[in-house]
Structures are given as C-alpha cells and as structure tokens.
Length: 220
Image (tube, rainbow, N blue to C red):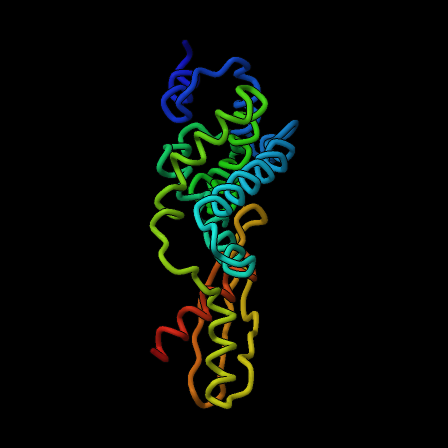
C-alpha cells in the first residue's frame, strides 16, 4: 500500500479501489494537465444532496426558509476547508511551485475545493453510501450542534437597520490582493453614523458576510 493509499484509508474510512481518482482530486490546476475541477463539481452536488436530506430528516417541523439558513451555514468553502485541515490534506496536495510558494496549501479556496473533489472521487470509487458516511462523520458537529436555524449575517444586519429606522447597510470592496488561486478581498460596510466595519475573505461574498458579522458584534 502506498503512503497516499494508506493516508486515504484513514482519512476516508475506506481503502480506495482506483487511486488515480484521488490523485486527481488532490491535483491543482497550477500543476498543468488534469485537475480536481470536474470532481469538485460532482462532489459539491453530492455534499449538497446529502446535507439537504440530512436537514430535512433531522428538522421535520421546520419550513423551507429555516432549512435553507441551516444549509447555507454549513455548506461553505470555509467549512470544507476546515474538514480538509482536520484530515491533513495539505501535505498531499499536488500544487505547482508558484502556487505552493504563494501558500496554496493553506488557502481556504483550494482546501475547500479539494474536500469537495475528494467527496466526488469517493462517490465514484465507493458509491453514495460511502460518500454519505464520510459527510456525516465530518459535518455532524456543524449540523447536530445547531439549535435554532442561524440567520445569515447580511440578512440580520439588514433587519437590524430596518428595525432601527436606518438606511440599508452599504458595502464597498476596498481591496483585492493575493494570487489568482488564493485571492483576498477586503470589504467595508457602513450604517452611516451608527457604525462600520471592515473584513477580509476568500471571495467578495465571504468578505461581505464577515464584515456584516463584525458590525453586528459592534452593535450588540
């Protein structure tokens, strides 16, 4: 058994049949040639279906809106990246030299994508039940640890502004930095004289969410 196969057996809970699928799942486009993108596409759908079914079963009395809030809070790039870190994906990533020198092995974007690609590879290699078992093992704290359905920070900030007769929050992208494979966005959000906050993220949407959460914390 190769070192990669041994690690996958521990990380995924099964011994891979087709190691090449998992090699592809760990290969970033900076290496040239085939990368994880197609497997990421598939894994994202498997993750989404599994979590949606899980939430539908676990919270039988909740309406669609609350289920959607739960879903959106756990199926995120950051959540997937944290799973990758827990698995110890970093040393097994296949990155081009520049991407590795730029910190690609710690990039939320790359780690999140690779987690979804590994789910896609696992689904093809072992079937849906194995993929579901992996997802349940690594997402159970995020889902079963929830009590009330979380509200998205941007929606909560919008509601706060309306409840206090304020104009809607204004978001401004003030900086974009970092390499193409690991960008960093900085967003400024303001509620006029009430307060403002700045935050960064791996996408504009992630930065806006973080800025809204930071401002809500100031207002609480």
